[in-house]
Image 1 (cartoon, each protein chain N blue to C red):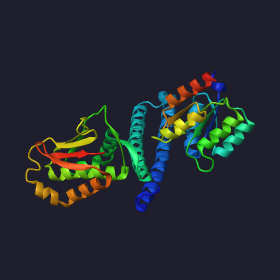
Image 2 (image 1 turned 180 degrees about the horizontal axis):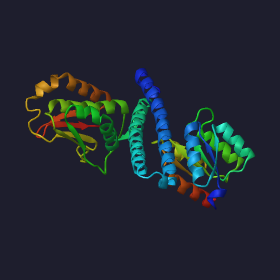
Image 3 (image 1 turned 90 degrees about the horizontal axis):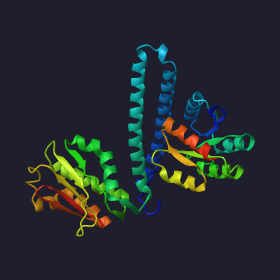
Image 4 (image 1 turned 45 degrees about the horizontal axis):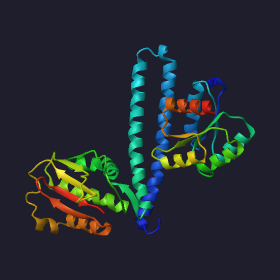
Length: 218
Length: 124
C-alpha cells in the first residue's frame, strides 16, 4: 500500500475484508436454500399445494443472494482500488463497475444512466481510486445540471484524436443552457473535477448540444 | 465411477457452509467429509484415502494455495477443485498453475459442481 493515502487505504482494507465476510454469509444462505430445495424435491408428494409456494420462496432467496453477491463483489473490487497507487484499467469495465455501484445515488437525483457497449475500449494506467472519483463527479455534475428524467448516456468513442476518452451526454436539450463557460469554470463542482484531472493527467471539457462532458484520459 | 464410491474431502473454515454442502453432496450419493482448515485437511489426506478435494482458497492459518501445495506433495494425483470468493479469479488461476484441476466461485451452483467433480475424477 505504498504511496497511498492512509485513510483511503485503511477504509479500503476494512471494506474489502467485510465484503469478503459478507460473501461467505451469502454463500451459506444460498447453500441452505439449495438444501431446502433438495429436501422439497424429495418430499414433493407429501407437500400438496405448499410445495409450489415453498419453491417460490427458495427461488426468491436464491435470486436475492445472487444480487447480494453482485453488489458485494463490486464493492470488494472497488475497495481493492485503494491498494494501488497506479494500475492498468480498462475504461469500459471501470465505467461499468462505477455505474453499477452508484446507480442508486444517481437514480435518487432523478436521472438515468445508460452505458453504451464498447468492444474496443482502451486501457490506461492511472490512480484507480481518483479515476473512479473523477467519473462519479462528472456524472454527478451533469445530473445536477439536468432536469428530472434525463438520461445520461456514457460512451467510449474510439478516435485517433482522443485514443482514450469518455463522453457523458444528456438526451435532452434544455439542460445546461444557462451554464455559460464562465459560470462553469467558477462552479465549485467543476473546480473539483479539474483538480482531479490535474492529478491524473486528464482533461475535462464541457460539450454542448447535447450538453455533457468529454473526458480525455492519458 | 459410481457416486456411492466417491469420497470427497471438503476443506473450508466456514463450518456451516461446509456442513450444508456436505449434506447436499451426500443426498446425491457421495461420501463427504469435512476439515475445518488446511492443517486438519492435510492430516486427513495423509491418513485416509479420498477421491477428490474441494478446497476453499481464503482460510485463516494455512491458506488454500499453501494447503494445495502440501496436498500435491502427499498425493500429486489427487484432484483438487478450488472454491473462491466471487470475482477472485486471480487466486483460482494461480491455483491451477500449482496443480488444481479447476476452480469454482461461491455461491456454488450444485449442478456445475457435480459436473466438475465427475470431470476431475474421470480425468484421473
